[in-house]
Image (tube, rainbow, N blue to C red; front, side, top):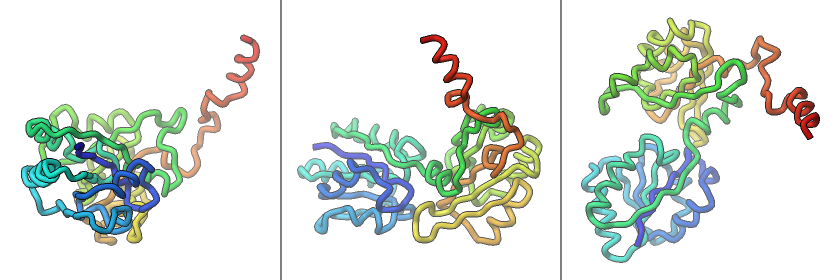
Length: 255
């Protein structure tokens, strides 16, 4: 038997992969984080599957459920919100499964930041504006961040920033980013992306904290920061070389 770690995507039932849907439809036991995943995604599970909400369980208890189910010959899916490669505790759980001699695999999902970018209709890497995306979080009631991964260090690059697990600290984070990005830099906040409760806020480094506080957002939100979010870029030459007439003409000359 194999424990399947499956990315559940941002929330909408039709934003999971075909493989994820197939694994859910065959699973006997499905563990899911109830804080982030709702009934839409769980509708892919078969009727008699045991559904285990893990939001009140520690890692040892979560692992015990998976190990016990595996030992009983039951198919197990461990759902994660978004994609398992980001903030899913995949490493901690698979390390425990390895120690227990349980095999496992991973099925990717649509990450929350990608869903957020799609909802606001923005590319995060605009030529000559920003060609890098930093996916990071901040420390509040969570594991300490490595010293070398300070927000200021990332902000100094001017890259598009994607802040996870940070919505309750929006005001202090914007104060930290202002010297690097400027008060007028565009910011978008997407809460519960693709779910029925979806909320999108558009503002700037100077204004977004007030909007977040007015909306009362406390969790399940992604913050996007950077010049790439601007609706219209001032540089008319900010276009991809890959599709430029120059590249096509050069390619023709080299034939």
